[in-house]
Length: 374
Image 1 (tube, rainbow, N blue to C red):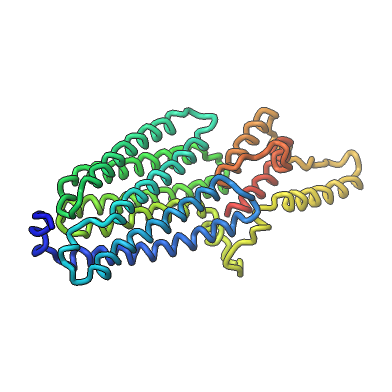
Image 2 (cartoon, rainbow, N blue to C red):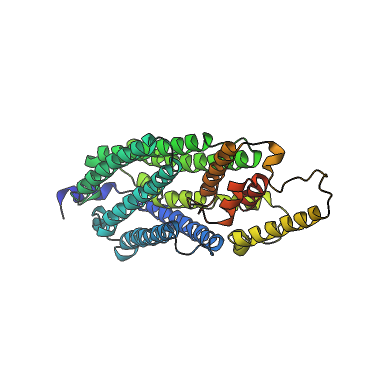
């Protein structure tokens, strides 16, 4: 046994070290269960969309989260069960502890990349300055994280972690800064996407609230781990908070993906079912057919009117007196809103909804888009 391990053995406080680590693993298991529920809700509400990039991302993050939980579970089992009453073994760093740090960093970087991808989508037809800035900061975070992993694998006992605490501060501080930049960028892009319609602006405001809340939650977790590491570097309280970071990031990202479902549940208080019908939400052709039937009935009524009678064209633009140029602008606005509501999915020009937008069914299109988003 090394001399550093022998020096640390009499100073071990099981309650503040491995006891805190055990509590952290227990809370991480609860958060993993919550991420399972959120993943289930996401797949249920997107059952009719086929295989998409976001579905693959959710599966990838779920696998990493499960692997992370197994590693921290093995870590606690190794110290508290396999080496029960073997105090000398408690000073050594087990392999699963080092590997779970790598998985956690991959999860954080992965979630940040998902947010950066959303910023890139929202920045379409705009300046690419924001996504480029976020990408550069993310690259710097990757460099700091790689340096932390290299320094971690040079440590063999827990007393060596004090020597690399500055790398820990730099990594957690950079993560907090990236969270702030991403949340600010998304809120700015959403705020500048307001259309003046109450339904659109209300939904955008709700998305901004979700982004701010989730960004604040991950930032507070990072800062809490950093502060406890600075104040109490010789116990494992900061490690107990740090192992929760991966689960907090995954749950925050899934909560943003499910924001439409949560806002729909809150708005539709008369809905007796706990989950929305995926076929009603993601079958736009059914809504379009219903709208076409409604317009057909209106046109049949107009057949029996006298030619001199005032006939209101089914297009609501006659009512608002919009020019063809304004029609095209509003069509592009609704296409962008559709992309925001449907997690970045493009509105195909051949779709009936896009044709409604082009010919001027502004009220009909607005009703459709936000019927599936409330």
